[in-house]
Length: 290
Length: 327
Image 1 (cartoon, rainbow over the protein chains, first blue to last red):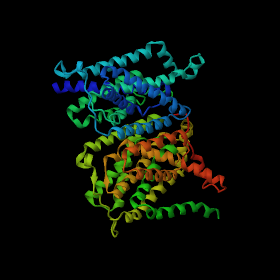
Image 2: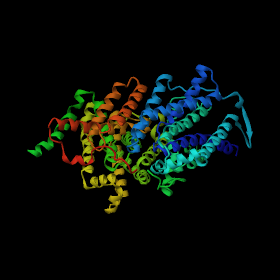
Image 3: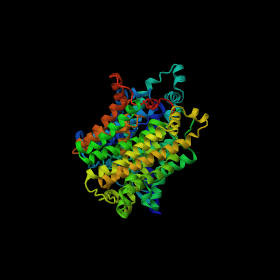
């Protein structure tokens, strides 16, 4: 029983990362129609940024939690301006391939400099130790990760569903031409939205740094899970990305209670079921453009 | 006379294939030909059915493992082992294709990618069969009456099977079936309106493509004597897509040109695997940004400017970039 409770929390932690990454993917896809393969690599860069801030400048976890996502987000905006922008007129597959190429460059570039060895990163002192959470004692930092991710997801949902800015973004997602015709400058929002999505990935990376070793390939498997989550949730759906993210995390961890080998398989089995029963995804609609 | 001219390119191609192990070491020559076949199987879907599979490593890897396991445990002739690999992959392509063809465009790419990762994890866990992270080594290759220990000998023994793979791909593309695929790629609702069960066509194309990738993977494992997990990794799928696009989408033979370049490049960089990732990624970025028509089309354009007649008029219908729009 304790083990199940423990796995439930582990599932929520994993789900937090799936949700943060899928959320960024969904926001970017919604406005740019780009499936950003480099999302996992940018998550890794977020973790590396936190690591280097501490190593070279003595900047701790809390400032890094703000500075690293902003820095990587700006890098993402540069990427959008220089490269991704050039392919907007073409099939979205080309940007998928472009970001795949960037993924290889980023991952192996970091690997060239720092090697494959994972670098440890300390959890902030305020969140050391563990607290009793119901049946089991659970590391405080991990509980923080769950809570923080939920807050971020809700905040993003609020901005997109309840504010004027979000209204523009949603309108641009559904009917870009009509939104333009109404006098709204859609193009102005493209670069910031991409940067924001990338910042979410980097934020996930900073959060992961104290739990998982900071290594060049830390995002290389996560991105595939994020893709499965996005297909399950329904591409471009904000709520779908978050709900499916936590769902996959929890179900995978609970399946591991029965057989550890199942943990990695659950996401893909779930994706197969969703494709059979509801090809558009839990929250998606097939009518959505592209 | 015209007939003679039409055969000429194939005669030249065959001569090059026969001479290849003389100009480079035979293992690399074999790798180029099987990677070419692998990329052709990707092109069959991408160039002719308009479906980008980013999960073909699953079929390549399964073909490799199946061939390796059969060759090791039953000691069957290499031809049988390679065909078992092809069969196993075609079989796996049935459920994957059944599910993946429910989505199109970018979704199709993501779904195939995810399913391939599933195969990767299964292979990783199923250690008794696959050797887990160690992979399978010392895969024997035999054929009654032949000694195939040397790579050069195996190259010539495997060549007919590889050429058969090319011929099958060529036949598929130039058959009525292939033309229906092109029709689906260009305008699926129209093909449906004309009465074609487009979904079944796409599924069949997926299974055939998976089978060819499995054949290529099986021959790779037999030629190199091992099957390992990285054959199933998503970077392998990306590698095949890169070769296809570099050669030219929808050109089939372009895949061979792409394979020559990518494998020579990789061979030159074997001492620094990280650098090879950076270079491969950079090549990817440059091609997607600035060289989408690929080598084959570029080469043809140059030939045309020099006044040479086109190689074949029929290829024209399917050349060029992925069509913009529907997905």
